[in-house]
Length: 427
Image 1 (cartoon, helix red, strand yellow):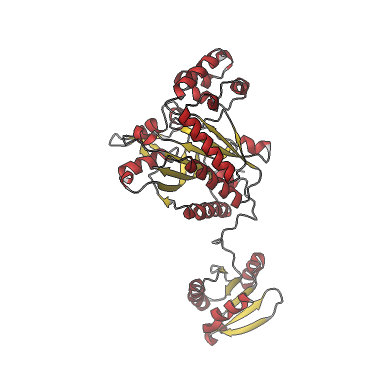
Image 2: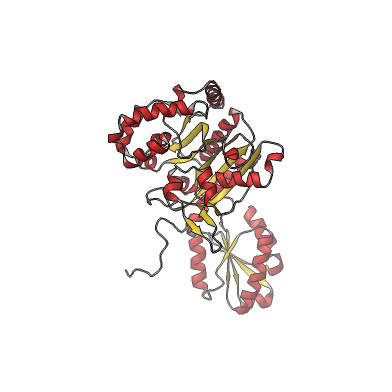
């Protein structure tokens, strides 16, 4: 087969019509659940100042150091395609004065994100997320609620064998001491660490715990654990988070080496992972997030407690069964409209609009003239009824209705067809 001239960029993918229903189903379930909890939608630009991510996401993160798509405008602005939602939503919270509104502010976002990384199963350079943020609430109940919402979404989508991993990484009071312990431990093992971890050890030792390299796993497993070195405030906060999770009976497990890959996190961090197969485990988390009480101050605002998380649409889609991927808006007609001749085509347009106004889905193939070809399409779509409109029917202002199961036909007056078909479908 000859290679075509233009193909999609490496690591990016087309969402074809047959895949759209999976995305629609996931988004519809997500929005239904977060609307119940009072979240409001916010859309932020796909392009933001590069400095926003350097300050917000963190200079030592893989996202900023290796994964951002950056560009310079003709005016000299340094911009980047958004690699994650949180810094942009936090910027909008500040810029639009949301801190002066009654708190907490609950926001959700959806859309594409961009990270330059090696394409592999479950990882794309353009991917999609469903994102939640809550600003202005210190309560550990908020952390538990964020986890509960993502777990509920996955349950509603009937994703099997999912597990919640949770940890606390402390705050500015207790983390400096813990970092010293980590540095001391990892320096003694530095010759066995991967190249990235040797760099991380100098820049942000917590990031070593997030390494995915096999050679580092054995070393990380013996490292000091954050939960053994929390200050009193962080310890109490995490204790309450776990009590809330127990109360709502969510199946979680402590992962003392879970840190997430972003610098702004404080206290609670979590991931929800699939454990169905080894291949699915390797794809990474389905959802993840945590608390980030210092981000708003870091971006120039007052210190503002915040918590959030995101769900990976492509990863969830890969686990969604075709049976479950049928949102209410999915096109599933019970009627096919076949026509023959130009005057029948003209009448068909008006009739289709009448069906639409009455919320009855009707399939058609107006570009085809062959009745045989049209009936073949109707058979393939497994419709219950086919309407036949030819030149004769147009003159007589009638239409033929064929029951596709029995083959029986009847003629109905054109102006009564919508009403009659509504009755038939109810039966």
